[in-house]
Length: 264
Image (cartoon, rainbow, N blue to C red):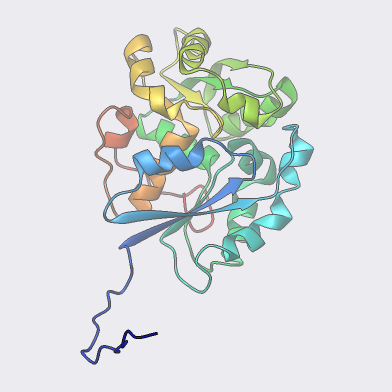
């Protein structure tokens, strides 16, 4: 070797963080959709997303969803170990319902003490409340068995459910492949004429990308799992969302996050 390598002697300046705001994501091992949605809705020069995955196996049943609970602490610990996060989102709506928002938050905070925790179910409730909606319609891709806890969750949050439609699928990889056109038509059919808003459940669905188009079709607000989760995460970072074409929710302030221990 003939090149002489010299070490710089000038002092090096360091920023407090490589990026100002840190959003942690805990995703299912099978997830195809959430990372791309968050990249579009959340990531900027000020905000970064840092993802890990938790072991999960289809079919999507309450039992399989509940089995993820013991793995959440270990998954959270793998996100920038030893460093603080501004918020952590657990990317599974149906699992957050069957496990329970508070239990999800406790498992994540065991590894990341004090961090606000967002679940898509709780974020969906906050999004609907931001619109002042009381009577809603709901669309899920799940089977009736997996949809039933979702119905109970939203009723317990104080909503009247005028119509609840499920698509009968039990594999989240198949849910992710539902075409956007088919998803729009299913959502239009799910919307009851008396409802004030529509909630589309499931982080696997590509519904966040069609929320604005769907609102134009039905003339009422649309709240989706990934859209509302991204909205809540940005507010926890102290950043008001301002993206055009992502649905009316992104322009609204977030109500006080009282649904979860330590977060939204």
